[in-house]
Image (cartoon, rainbow, N blue to C red; front, side):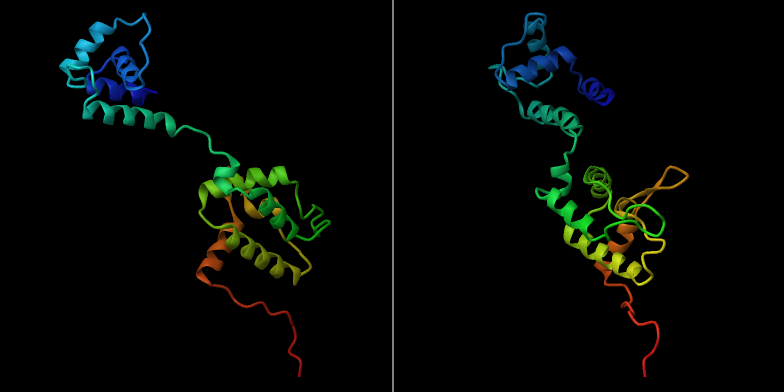
Length: 195
């Protein structure tokens, strides 16, 4: 909000004058609590209004700049961050993990709501596609299946896990990088050479 007031001060427009300018732009009659005639005179002298009370190019640009401050603060929805079919993708992602418990004693799959929160963070911080996410997850699960899922993270901690210093890590992002760069070794499903 401070930025908006700084912008008004820099432009030499009072909040009341901006209110009148905004009303003219939106074809709304200003409320009586503002003396419109005084504010209109100020706006004319500042070249924000013409003599016929039409907005100048400067005033249109200024209104857009002020509007931009408020548009940035809109909360992003899950659909905006993760796409229209994010629920289906979350279910598909969760199904890639083994059912039941991991050797650590925790369940490999977590509930969808917890996954949604984790993926909201993921897609706010990384720009991978769902296709890459699914391939990376398949790769991760395949690697840990060779060792019976020992030390494997569950479906939520694979997306993000909080460190002791309150920062977040994403193993999924690391695997997505490898998938995008095609930079990983082929899995060796056989531990012994068979002659």
